[in-house]
Length: 240
Image 1 (cartoon, rainbow, N blue to C red):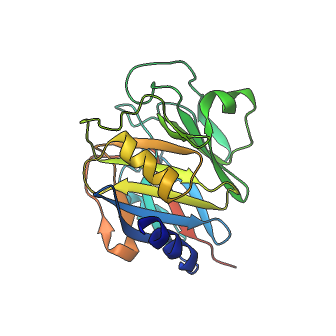
Image 2 (tube, rainbow, N blue to C red):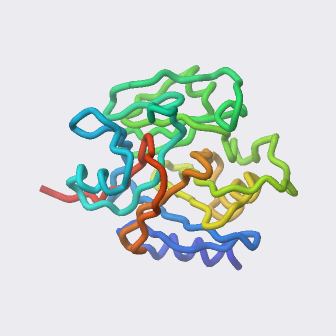
C-alpha cells in the first residue's frame, strides 16, 4: 500500500516538484521529485565572489529562477571543496576518485550523479570513468545505495548504525529525479530499499549523513545546520 500511494502521488504531481512525507519500514522520509521536462537540476558551490555559498539563504539570493527545492549535494572537505568529481556548468573543478578509501565515500562502489542535456543518471564511478558522459553538472559521492537493482553488498539489514541521511536516484529514462532525505535516523539499508522497492529506482547514490538538509519552499522548510559544500538545486523552468 505504501508503494502504491507513493506512485500515485508521483503520477498525479502536476508540473511543480512533488515533495511529500513517506513512511517506509516505520521510518519517516521526505521525497522530492524533479521533472526534467519542466525543471532544471543544477549544482552550485560558489557565489559571484568565489566563496562557497554555504547556505540556503545565500543560494536563494544567488538564484534568479524560482527554486522548487534544494539539498546538500555531496561530501566535501573542511574548506567545503568537493571530495570527488565535481562539474558545474560544464567545467570540471575536481577529478573522479575510483580507489577504495576510508569513510562512506570510499566504501566502493561509489557513484556519480550526472545531469546531461535533458536527462539525469546515477552511474557507478568506475563505469563512469571508463566511458565519461558529457555532464553539464556532476557530483561524486558514496556509497552507492542501489546498483543495477541490487543493494550495496556491505549494507546490513539489521544494522544499528543510524543517521540522518540523504540520497538521489533517477528513473531509467532519466526524466525524473528522486531526492530523498530521512526525517529521523535511518540505516543505509532502509534508505536503499526505499529507492529500490518504493521509488522503483535501479541506481541510487548516498549524498551525506548528519549534515543532510532540505530547502523546500512549498513545505515551508529550510533546514538549519553547518555550512554546506556543493548544493543540488531544482528550479522551475521559465520561458522568456
